Length: 221
Length: 323
Image 1 (cartoon, chains in turn cyan, brown):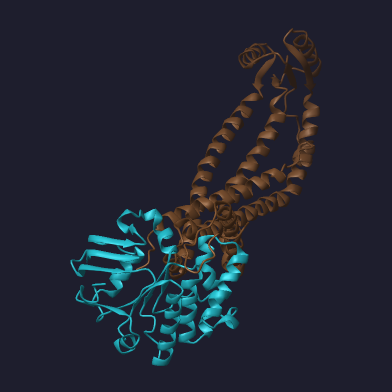
Image 2 (cartoon, rainbow over the protein chains, first blue to last red):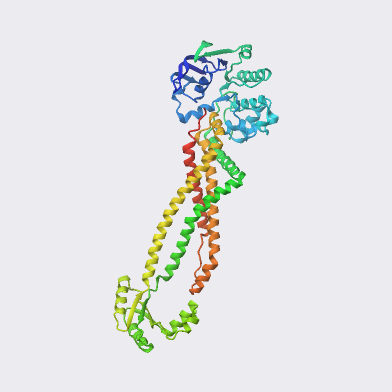
């Protein structure tokens, strides 16, 4: 589903964020991505999201070489990927419902279908009763679950999460991870960047480890 | 069928073309309503924007309406052309009457009217309000006057030739073609029209820039939101839409304000102009914008609003990318 082949990323200022990274994530896989801060986790995520393009090598998502995706097609590409951010990135002037509905509105679903899917996603994360609430009135864990509901509402094939438990206590973090596992069980490819080694090593999934832009473990299938 | 095909858990979210059209329409409605909501939600600052645009539009439009009225007025004076023939002071009333008959006998004359010096003095006294002064004069300083109306078929040079012929007659002091001031007025109005066009073009540019700046601020205020929308797959068109509608609402509101301002100004001037017209024994009435004119103004405002928004959106939106 996601394939990196000898990918390097050098930023304009000369900093090498990724060096010669190769790995493959199969459909239905849940993989953790770890490494110290600045090791290249975010850069790797950004390449998959097409927020950046690789300097060298090939990134393939769902069988498509991302180098062939024109700038005009980037929005289309992103609609097939659900993303969860560390700082939630919610719109605080809209209700929880409208936040979760955003990707569906963008993809052009009609409003009945949007209502159905938003409620299904909110139900999944256990926030069905908060759909009219404003995100700022929610706790950190709840906000993160709204972010997850938004990421999965469009039923993407791929779910990316960048430090999704960064600001949460261990109990809430474990709960969030269980949520990701449940999406993985229904066939979503999940890639989670996290530096919480204690947590992710307990979960018995494959772990990709980056150090200074190089993949040091987990690369082989 | 208005439901996306994919129902499976993780299958690709794909919608049909008809659904996409429906969704596009729906998002237009949504953007329009949402933008209007945001504009109305800040009544004071929106009112300011509307006033600025309205006044900037009202200036050239008001001037243009004034010119239209002036053109209407001058077209009434265009015909009949008159030649005022002032007779020598020595020429008395009976001699003037004889001369009038002689001139009227010419083939190229339609009518001749004699205004005797006494009648002229009386009229001057009545119209100028200097009746007392006039009455105190020892002798009438005014000459006898013949108002000569040339044949309608005569063109400009022929009328000028007629004037020369009349002026050459012995008892005539001077013959003045009343067209001259009208021609001056007409060329002044042509100049005025050009000026209005130039000022109007400048102000329209100003309106577009003002709106562009307003939209730029709106974009800055919603930068975070734009980033998020782009991250979850919103296209540039999707992000652009609400801002274009915001521009449209500002422009339409500004056009409406301009219509109101011009109408108010006309209403304000209506009575004095009526009084003035009555003094000149004229039934002239100010003509306003009319329903179509006001509608055009609103449409013009809308177009300018869209143009300004497009300008701002084109320049600033593509610069906002997820980092």
